[in-house]
Length: 306
Image (cartoon, rainbow, N blue to C red; front, side, top):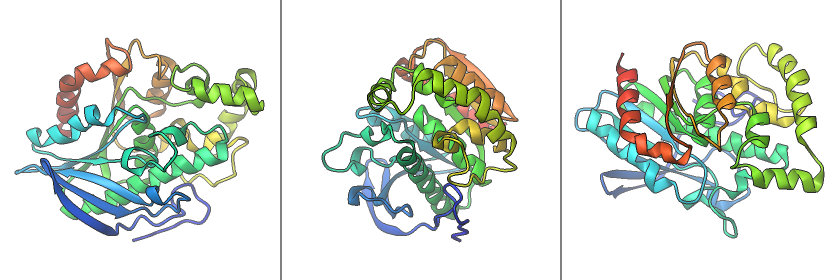
């Protein structure tokens, strides 16, 4: 079941699910799986997977939340309400977040890493865990779907390019192209300060890489099996835009018209990179997109069923 591929992003590790513990929780159960990614932090060595069953499930949706410190209780709403539409809802807690946060750090803080090789490892950790959760959820013998919100959309996109098990994707307020996300987003201002302090990157240098080197790197890829160290700069190797052309599944996207976290160019470029995608714009900002949660879940379920 492992199927590891040496030195290939995410695929160099096993995706075999090993259950460590299981307990009941409000509306479902919490599973603790072993993470197949070797983390330096013991708090991050376990995957926390919340599962909310439907009495008459016709599919399962794996929901991947965004990064942050306070958003889980709002985004958990999706996983808990998919059973209302006859789908099992599953929520994977991202590495370095909430119950997986190492001591001395805030939830999600380790994804604000300025050293791109380390950040590549954090992204790879999340994708390996998502692939592991998919292997576990396959045991239910039901169609499987992926939904990613904000940062979770990055991980869902990469995961779908590496696994044919998810049948469709729903991506909300997400995007690709790290030039836009790093230098044009309100959310990554901490990274920009770090880059300025150590002089490892700047807008001009980053733009040059993305205009000249990135197209050549992507054109040389034959599939989503990206070899570590093969790109001129590491961030090419974990940009969802790199993987989107290899996503074979149909994709539904929701972009926010007034998003200061994920620039509209970022959302639109990711949309264009998919082969089979539909993009809906909602009249909101990034955080206020949650006000449209009922519309988003209804349209997502409809998309899964057509």
